[in-house]
Length: 297
Image (cartoon, rainbow, N blue to C red; front, side, top):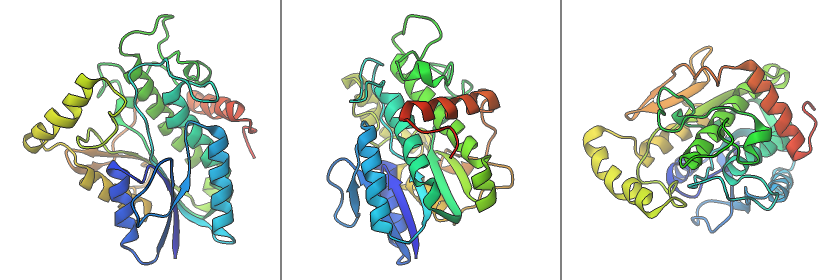
């Protein structure tokens, strides 16, 4: 019996992945969710906009598991808003707090329960790379700045700050995945770490907090165009996510970044900023301070 713990498993790509995993009778799936979930999915309360809720969820998972270990940890949930003015109950910029900081805390809390050879999948985005995001690429991964909504190195935050905040949070996911993969714990336990980019996928609810115009393009126009441009689909992305989480698809040696491009899984190089070891170490250390944990256990 494989035990999988997951966030973002109640809609979009994550829901497809959860349903795919549950088709295997040897999989036990625990999903953290804020709202109501489909009846087949066992959910525990989780609000990623609250670090207290993250801690409660981790404690509930521990209690539910008993002596069992976690064979797969899928950190998939994300939010995308139009600006950097929103704050969580902890006072942190919402996009950074939900997409990175909450998942960082959950990862740290559940890492000791990972089984030898466990798989950790963190959903990232190719928006982390200026080559694929010329509109609003991330400029840095400084947790101290991002937590305050300072997504641009200039003092003023421009009209694309919401998209830049999302791109920066996805950069943070990738750097966190790299940091875990290179840790002594992961090396000793044989933990496999994957940063998964589902790519541009019309038909998900990721744009639900955006402007009406943005939502119209994402929810109406792109699904029409996707047929002709072979854009990714929730069904295809969800199936890939499930295969990665269950170890059905194994990364090539030395590759961590799994990217879906035109409905095909590839293993490309990551961006220059995502390859920055100093930025990776700094993000890990500063994130630990923000959630009240030591940098190393």
